[in-house]
Length: 311
Image 1 (cartoon, helix red, strand yellow):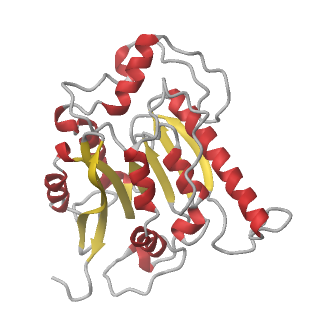
Image 2: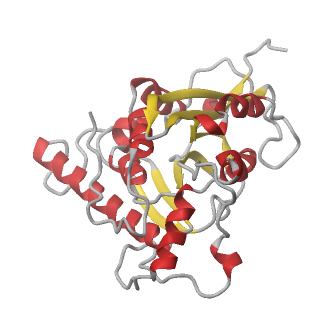
């Protein structure tokens, strides 16, 4: 079992505390089936394939992994520190976004600490030399780039994200909080993506608002998730996939069916030329029981490319 990153430094009055949903993501991403999927799907070497225009049949660069709504940073830290084990190689780049500036600061610190701890573990176990150079090709953490204060995946160019992970605000509520830029007035100050200090603690009302951002999902708990889902055909690379957490009241079966009806061959900058591609959505992780008050599941979303001879 891979270690869970330490989040004891996170201010939980301002940032979502890791809970059953966070740990379900960690368990799912490190399960044998998903490690097999990630390591084969994002191998740096061309795959031997019989598919038409499959992006995996071409040499690929390091995958860009994005966590949307990173909160404490436990998922970003887990993916970065354990990149070699999850992807089969450490040539992995990670980023995160969150509208909560305190979450950005927490994510940066959590990830930096987790990577340092993994590096120390490798040195003590002999998988790196005295200078910190890897002695095993698949050993080592990935490269953590930054935690960006941003709305969902809006900063990213079309086709730039290879793996997207989202633990959304999924609780059904009468409405969702207005985004920072819609509220007016300056946002609360924080340490930003670098993980430095300088935070000025907000007042009680601001604390309540920041925590509402982490759980309030609006109608059917899907208002924020639907915005993210609508962006996937554009932001994901042709080989890209997304892991999205949902609860039972989000009606995940209906969501999966809707995704499978997406037109993966429509004429846009990201999908043009992907002959034979179709969208897939499958549940790859489940709580199997009530987690708090909701059964949870992880849906993986990706393109499947038709085999030679398929109509």
